[in-house]
Amino acid sequence: MQSVDDILSDAHAALDLYPYYVHLAVLSRGKNHCKIRLMVRENLFVQANRNVLAALTNFALIHEGQRLFGRDEYQSQWHYHPAEDPAQHDRSVAGQRAVTLAEFLVEADVILRRTNLVP
Image (tube, rainbow, N blue to C red; front, side):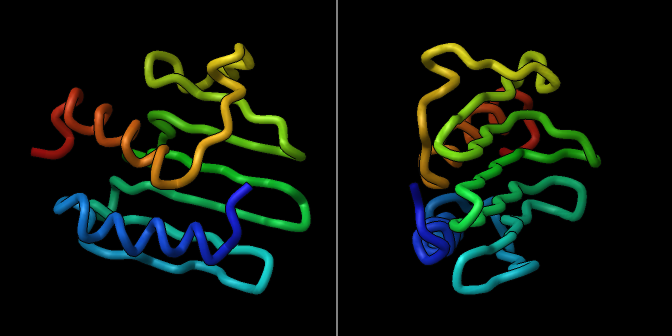
C-alpha cells in the first residue's frame, strides 16, 4: 500500500521518465490523502486518488472524459479495468494484483502508445 508521499514521488518521477506528461496537477492533498493528475493535455491524463485511512486507491487513464484503463483498490482488494472494456471489473488473480503508481504508468504507457495518443 503506497503512502501519499510515495504516490507524489512516483508522479514527480514520471515527469522525467515520460516526456508526454507536461504537468502535475495536485487537486487535493492532506496527510492521508491526495488526488492528482498527470496531464498529457487537457482531455488526456492519468488521475490518481489515494486515501490511506480508507485503504482506497484509484488509478485511471482518462481520455475525453472516459476511463480508458484503470486499477482500483478498496480495503486491500484490487481490481482491474482492462483497456479492451474499461467498464469491466476484472477480479481475476491478475486483476487483483496490487500496483504502485509507477507500475500503473508503465501499463498506461503501453496503452497510450498502442492507441497512438502519444508519439
